[in-house]
Length: 546
Image (tube, rainbow, N blue to C red; front, side):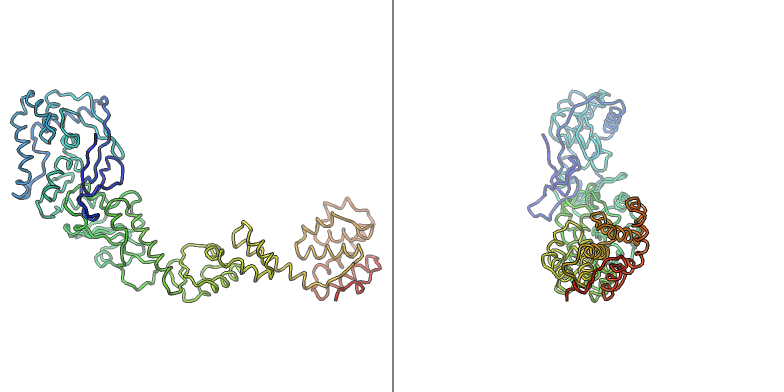
């Protein structure tokens, strides 16, 4: 069997963030243990320490059963608690008579819970306790009679500022009263919200905030910033606790990932309408130099007041919405690390791209009409945002070939790596286009031309692979060894060559060096010189394509 306390917060008794509203309006809620559910109890043997604690509480309750009630600030409070007070008076009159306590303990009201607990005082033992799960632990209490379990828990934990509120929540909610409970106090202020200064300090201390003249704030904020709702270096939660005349500020860095300030506050109070008493804003801007008013529309208030969002989640979700609004605005903007840039070139320079990324960014940003708003990103991250839409167009601009661009675009690499590959390919294509063209070359000349072009386009490692593929007799072997000498790769393969081939290769090395490094305009002559000095009677002019 379970019970519900209608109100602002879920009693963490279930460890659940689930709201049961007090009234039909989604924004009208009461504080304290809202939506409380106590899970199924399990009876277990009590340890000596726990049993002693329960007995001690029963002994103190015997001395003063009225301690389960708050202090009444005025006559209005007393009148509203008249029915409960009469219940306690009835128990107090018979507290020495166990048989009458037994009978009264069967009442399903607060008086019944007190009567059942006083039986523990008389017995001076509580060997078996009910264990009910709560957030971070378990509530232990003795079941005596038929009183409601929430009343038994409250009575047997009357010194707990949170749990004792379970004893009176019905009458408080029914009469729209205000109650405040803290470690050293417990008071009903009637139908007026009037939290005592001690209660305010109790709440603020639990949050470990600096507190001065009714302004509470975390280490990253200052009093004047909160009082004037100014922007700070970090977005922050700004709460006006109206009845306490107190302003609270908690920045994004200090905010909790799991609970929110109202959760921690309203665990210890009951009042008719939390929304009326607390005003919540998120102060912060995406831009450091933003001159707009510091207070922008705060969203997700229902979720925050209901307890489904933690402090940190509330800040982060609002800042994400503001970022989205900035991106969706009609004004074309470039924003990096909260700094706005007037033009794409300045924005690109601030990203510090390499030369290939810079060219890509210039193309992509010119094509796009969207604002770019990013923080702590690499150039590749910005490129990725635009890559799917404009990446293939950019690749076609580089390699001048739709088919090749499509192949590159399908690669699983990052855009930055694909761009580097595209520029390498462009370079190779340019090399091929600039060098003289030949048709139907004799095999030796074709071998030399293949090695020279492979070196220029794909590098020395690829050229070594081509050398291993073929050899054209003694002349070809000598030329092969000469190419190996030119790139300092001869040591591992020297054993393959005869003495005469090695000597010829050494002789040809200067001509090979020239062929590998000369300008495209001098390639033909360097090619011819190498063939001539190798002893090959080949006139390249006969094969040159014009």
